[in-house]
Length: 103
Image (cartoon, rainbow, N blue to C red; front, side, top):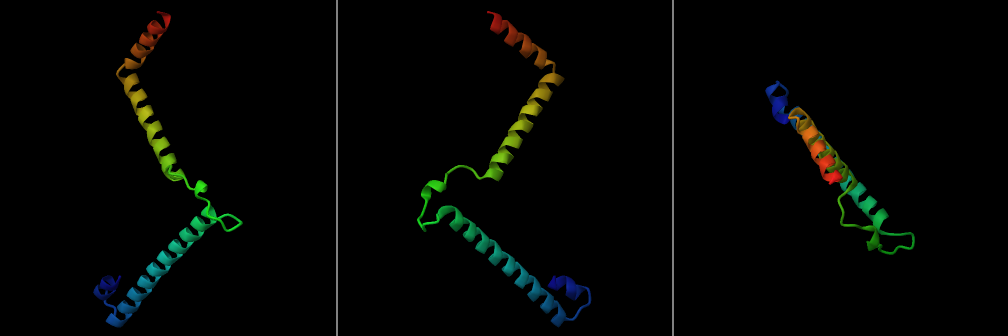
């Protein structure tokens, strides 16, 4: 921002003020994110009797990554199915499964 303001013709003092505002906003946002993350972790791990509850912490993937993985898996399955249908292998696989089930 500072370089853009100077190249745009603003005074150096005004460009420095803009840069200070941007740096303050970045720092404030980081502080807010860290504070909220810490508060949420404390609410999850500490119960009403002020005891540490490690049983509430699991080693699994967070919900958003599980959703991402499920979507990716579904897309991959859809691509494989589309490829089988395009190459006419879908019907051959069905015939093979029917013959294998009858035997």
